[in-house]
Length: 389
Image (cartoon, rainbow, N blue to C red; front, side, top):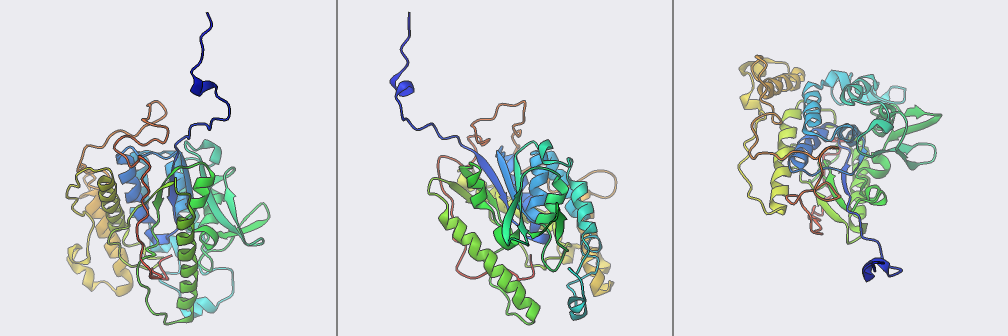
């Protein structure tokens, strides 16, 4: 006997049910990319897993890593790398270049060999096809002055192109085309995530656009500020232009210090600040109680007593060593890092390929959902330290 299908399955012209997809959107931010590591921990602890990841510059590196392995284990791997970063490896000439460095000939102030070595250490795969989660990163095509989205092929080259900060690093040539940092055209690629079908965006924007800027003192400062204003303007314009049915959660950066783009001595503190700010924000949105989260980073008053005896140019390195020592323990093998200590709440397992996730977007009932749109007021100031790229 024939069975009649319900009317709602047979009527023509009915709109298909919307498939919920979660995107992680990771911005540029140079040394402040460490904040994203803490944010990623907060998301994954709450079983918020991406269906797609888009990234720019340092967010391309962090985003590619989490796309390869969207787990707390990968967050721990990122933490280790950020703790081990050394100014001399990433920016071989030391602190912000002098007028002599700026006047010399060449494409850039620094070679990018050290940065490439870091990217290769972080990424467990070498090709887009090997990633567990779809990932795209943006770079600027210098010849056409347009955004170029990498989605296939060699992964390290794509991340390097996305992170080739103008003046700082040389352009990256791929198949005869020269690329520089994606932040020139799309620093916080929210619109791209929507184009890829995302209905819920978690935005890991670490550029501190809402902070007042210092008054420029040099021509290079003014150039940085113009670059910064352009990025901020694009971010706010894209945020306002998103469709009203797209859920947006911009994760806060907490009380992150204002640091130069090449100051890598604060990675431990930034990861912890990013984690605590994001965890508190997500818990409030989900209606969960917010427990105390004591900071485990270091401040100058807590580091080894002889730091003041160090020459000023060596103090950042001394701070970084002290931070690593505190996060990793006393050398006995016990690790007390912010990602590996006893959590404030028992984290739920992150859904994997062999675990059925609750909901198509990879967000459990504890996550932020139900169609809320989180568009925080980011202030009216132009914001940000112009050198904190």
